[in-house]
Length: 355
Image 1: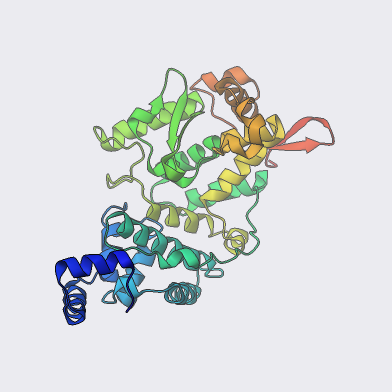
Image 2: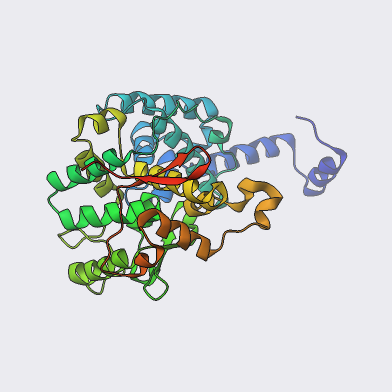
């Protein structure tokens, strides 16, 4: 063991011998409290909402390596956990490739160790050196007018709660939101006077979106009838509010259609469909804002070309109504099944299901 001149001066001042230093090192090492992977994972689980994307990955960590010393976890360990998670996921008949489980394991481990570092329990995050797996090309795209109607009919045919299924279908279709937008929707997020709803989605980002007066009235009535006094808007028939687990059932009801099962159609396909329609009607800039994507997507120009609430309102009304003023009439239901289709440089045509 070698020392700098400054270190030697301190050692001499304290009158420490080499044996004293070795003994002190042993005592300090023995007195260090080991932080287990269990403690790291449980600390993050405690602050995550139920059914969070990371929850299953953290549960796997607890089972696979809960008693291990977190300070000794290396990048290869994380890579091995990710591979094992993907293999387990592939055993589920509903899984397509297991890449999502691999990605979730890496991200969950990164988040858990980052939290432990912030708390002063650890110094190193082994998951940072583990790259995310490449995602295979997605088959997700906009649904046709006929497919939209078919998905809606499948929900009704296999639903034990048609009121909720139809209401959520309409909410997703009109707003183009992610499912968190429906799960987190609260009474304070409804603004009947301006006919807008506040969506709280990815990374807790918020935005206000236009909806039809028809949908607004139905949301208010549903909230009062199902669970008056609860802050959340959308409730199951048993009184509990929506969660991610409910959306798995939502997708399963649609997938009673053979083509939907083959494609893996879920609530997110409605978002794809609506954002595609808005792009056809009002262009990419408005579509990006409708989707909740950041202005940074358009570089510096994006800070000068912000889309106004009125532009969103006009695009919404054009898509779902024959005349824009109808969006303000609660007695006129929106046309949820029609699609906006380009016509070779001419004004957009609207295509609706046959019959």
